[in-house]
Image 1: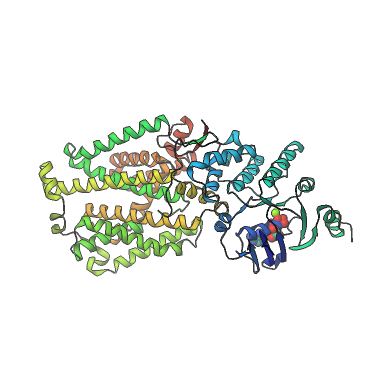
Image 2: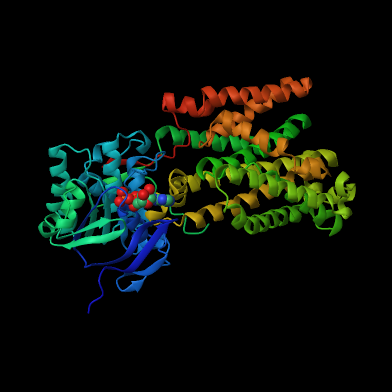
Length: 241
Length: 359
Ligand SMILES: Nc1ncnc2c1ncn2[C@@H]1O[C@H](COP(=O)(O)OP(=O)(O)O)[C@@H](O)[C@H]1O
Ligand SMILES: [Mg+2]
């Protein structure tokens, strides 16, 4: 069997007594798009931190292209092709929008200084930030900070893009633009894992959906199948199974 | 340093017609003016009084220390109050190498830098486990430990310290030629040599920091300071860059310390590891002028020099006044004199921003 782009085998993590990842198995093929839903505190963002390498699992293994990266630090995982956004934006506030993406292009994507201008300009155009390229990132409003999260993650030249709740607070029109942007990213061959509460946006993009609750995968499969499953309805509507 | 310091620099036009611009007309003019100023400073000993030369030695050494602190704390977020460890060690290595081992002072200076860098490399992994204020306290503790160790070192006078014997500087390399060149006595020639050394060190420090801040590594360092987690997530080896910077700054600070004590010709643990002299003043210079700018510390050191010139006679009142100025500045002008001015007037003599332009 061809190794998957990303594979998690029995990954677990706790903060003290709180189990945030409970024996998670997951497989993602190159170019695939996976959606993750689940209530607040389910462990969705923690899962991203485990995949991106900012946290180490207590047990289990994480494979990228079939190579064990469980002990690989975040910076090396980025260079190996994992780009991520943060749910709470973490811009480099003292740098400009362009410089934020330039750092990602130089260090994450390994671009040469000569390539950086065009490469980043393309990404800033795609994410609607080109008009603000010279602004300090620290002074951006929340929506632009979220756009910058996406732009900076893209500038690392990922094969796997992890998006953490980037659609919240968007107007309908903005949401449509975001959907189009992520489709375009997919068209360029990038695999996506997207955590999102705005379910209709998610369903417009992903091939597959998983639902997390208390650190466990409680449902997995085709998007409508998962959305209609009893367990997800129970979690979201409070309807007893 | 660690990786190729590849500047993301001016006028690289790509296929898509975008380019990155850093320099401005003003910055190019400023660079030319600065070059003339440096040339002027090189030939200054031919005209200037010995008192002015000695003052400028103080100005240059303090400026070099302030620039080094600025790059560590301002750009790197490594807020240290323990740089006196490296100043003191530099001074002590100079004394040990010249007095005990009989080396020429000019050889002892780079040796002092290497030793300080070695100590920085050894204590770095320990200190870097601490964050924020704990890092600051830790750096101060390290300096205190160094002071106590040097106070135990009997061959250099233990706690009371020692003086540099005349023979050490009397036979110093370059002394005779400078004496002949300027037709001055040996003590004056020694001052001139130290003056030139400090000039070289401060110009090299500023040039290196400017090149670094504009390079890809400088960009990475700023990113690590703003968000460690995000910087690592975009592929920056944050810990390595900080560690490398820490060592390089240790080397440079040790070199400055050695030159300072060659000039003073007398060393004691309390003076060499003084937190007031080598950290408080240095912080004052950087904070007053403007942290995270290269022009700021230049403004700051000139202000300190002026204050010292006019107010030093008031003793402890002078220190009180310095503290007061620093507090008022931090409250009302946190970006410092130059930093505030540069932002309001949008004037940058040494610009660092990379601007995206369409050709
Ligand atoms: N670094 C941490 N230390 C302790 N608890 C944490 C930490 N990070 C997250 N948590 C807790 O773990 C749980 C899962 O968090 P998170 O993964 O952010 O949830 P989600 O993204 O699904 O809303 C929450 O209860 C949160 O408070
Ligand atoms: Mg979350």
